[in-house]
Image (cartoon, rainbow, N blue to C red; front, side):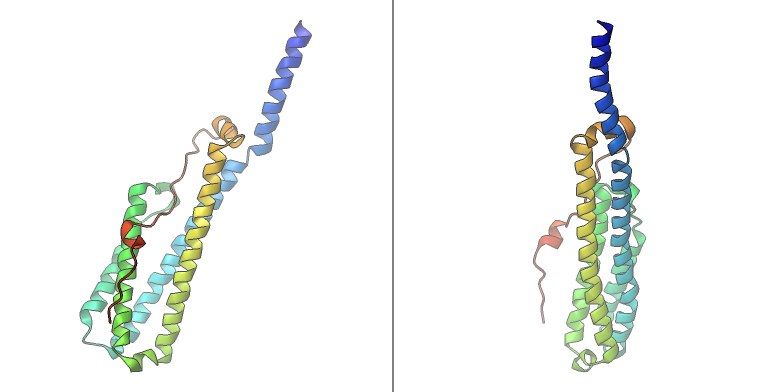
Length: 196
């Protein structure tokens, strides 16, 4: 009888131990991947914020009487830089606040581009063309970084919600929580209106 109980215990416990040991590092690895991807999102937003003063100064030289647009871009950039969002405080409210600030900056940049259309000699300026190209490239990098972050969060959340990851997380990583992903605000989902 003892032998049967021992065999049953081993038949249950050994596979459970095997599953935990084999999958033990998945949650921390996926968590670090999410953090790295979020850092890339922030890195690309920072790159954009760093380029904006150069773009504004270049345009200012040609369009000095368009002050309100420059003020709007500067204020929007300031709002973006005031939000300190890291992977440890990714919650729906902070993501919404971050997203709104970025949307405000995107809107201000759109207005700046309308100002540019008024000044044909500015559009031909080599410095401006270079900055505009850099800004466009940065916007594309932001899109790629957000996509990569969304994918990393999906993989992490799947690990916590499916077997055997759910079991391993419950045993070995009980503090692991489902992470919030990046989402566009309602304003960002609307088609932009460009007026010339």
